Length: 419
Ligand SMILES: Cc1cc2nc3c(=O)[nH]c(=O)nc-3n(C[C@H](O)[C@H](O)[C@H](O)COP(=O)(O)OP(=O)(O)OC[C@H]3O[C@@H](n4cnc5c(N)ncnc54)[C@H](O)[C@@H]3O)c2cc1C
Figure 1 (cartoon, rainbow, N blue to C red):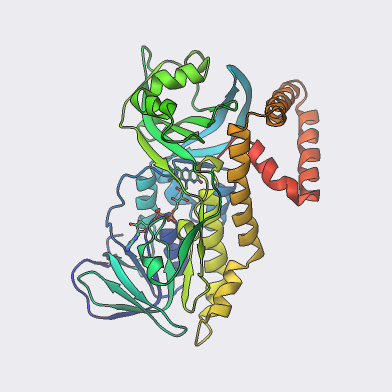
Figure 2: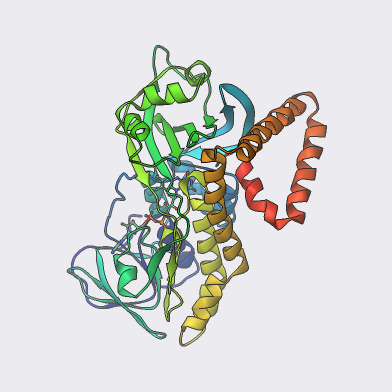
């Protein structure tokens, strides 16, 4: 990164092929891919060093495969702790174990590691974008205290913040009335040197607790708790006052199984609105990541979804658009209508509802479904221990049934331990 051009002082008007506003995970990954492909890219973010904010702290499965496929995996491995076994609990018992590569990290360090992988040709501008003027041929980006940047294409990757999009008439519409609440904090062992397991996921039982993830990150162990409870609920207030006491009361045998702990950091919390951008099919501008659609944090799909946005946009659509003289809204629409992107977007929204139902519905139907879900997993886990070959066959049959019935896909994705 030594030769990277960091601009903080007023610049003269700069022309570039692609301007990306927002250097969080999605904007930075897009800048990496486009810079490598040889485009003139300017990445603009208000923070030179990404601040410590509570966002995704653990990924696995599909997200890792995508990072590997895009050759963006190396920075993750420098900023994260790998782990490959998760103990899954429900109602005081171990249900099964998940095996597979996962990584735990602090979001700000992951973004910084990704930024350090930016090609030297990417111009990183530190500044607050204040206004945008767009058109099919040229985009104009005004940055506070700096001269305007012009670009052929504007990529908005500003996360959940709304101001810039609003200037373009792009509004965020609430697409689910579920509002997941997430709490994040660090823990350390009490009365011993280490925990009994590297990672543990504890699923709630119709009590509004979706799940609690405990997993390693560099230097500590993190707890991520996902809930569907009204933030004004007295139980939630008590949870903020005494997270350990409330969790150990709600999740029996947690301490016995994982080991006693104490909280060693501040407790961050986020209430997420599940929203999608409306009126975004406009000339010369495209939205990615949370700027387009906010995913339910409990579903663990935010990173997979933003990687789909980045991959489809940077590997398929931008190479086509860059050969044209104008990028009008009909060309832009092809990206939003991309079948792979649509499939991912729809799954992630359906998943918010499914998580809510599995977590918070107390009627007999959902109660039975929950019991069936965890019993089935527990039985399969028993079979795995006795006959791995039979268990593989059962997994294959289930995968075949899911492929045959797309409607089952989102429910099935939900039924696995979250990444
Ligand atoms: C509490 C929580 C837990 C989550 N847990 C998970 C999980 O377990 N698994 C999962 O997959 N996903 C999870 N997610 C979702 C995931 O974190 C997000 O999908 C992802 O971080 C979005 O990245 P982004 O780049 O789109 O936005 P961000 O990372 O928010 O980046 C936006 C960037 O835009 C910049 N910016 C904004 N406005 C301007 C401006 N005007 N000028 C210049 N710069 C600007 C900001 O500084 C920031 O750097 C979670 C989210 C939350 C909130």
